[in-house]
Figure 1 (cartoon, rainbow, N blue to C red):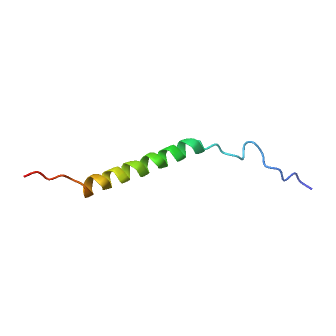
Figure 2: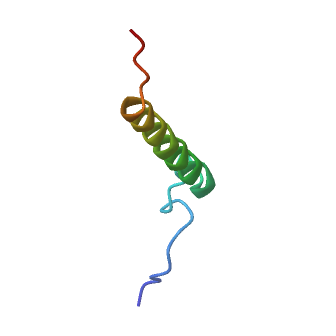
Figure 3: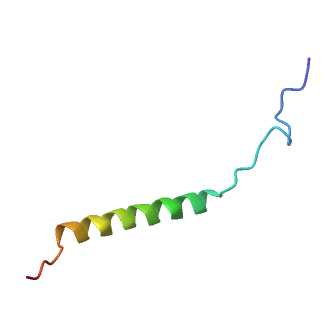
Length: 46
């Protein structure tokens, strides 16, 4: 019977860590909400 355990070479490391992915996602979410707030509360002076 062959060995079915995963090998080190089989596991590929991703370019970003989970913390980096979460930080990027949080940054995108805050940027989207800020721009939405700017659009809703844009002060027009005439």
